[in-house]
Length: 188
Image 1 (cartoon, rainbow, N blue to C red):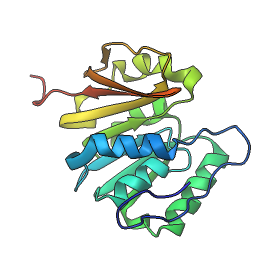
Image 2: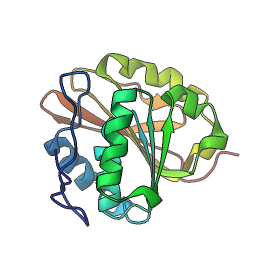
Image 3: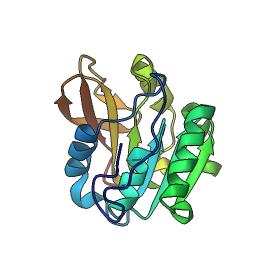
């Protein structure tokens, strides 16, 4: 696993041992950042189910201003912290060692509003996202923010996740990225 582009291009990232963690492949990461394109510079990114941190680290390498990583598993947190330290990105990150549901239910922990929210839950837990995002306050995201969900390509996500509305799906073999957009203006 490596950083694909930007200021840390080519830097190797520590990966998991065994199959307990499924990092986003280089191919899917490259496609994701091509899709995000000009949304990245100076953006605030929320990386849910962060794992090794590869998505957030790539976002920082490509010009994001700040990334909040949310991860609850101890082994993943160790890898995440090592990768951030190896890349010397500590001043641009916040790590929340808790479940996604715990984090999203506590707005005082947020460093947003976030311009890009990336969620890569374990594939068997993807359906839980609808319930998790159902009561998330609008303050989580900036106007016109994107939520990107990585999931199994055989899965079809709902048309809405909280305030986010589905706009597009991209498939890459067994993996898919579904994009949701948030309202351009705060709801009244």
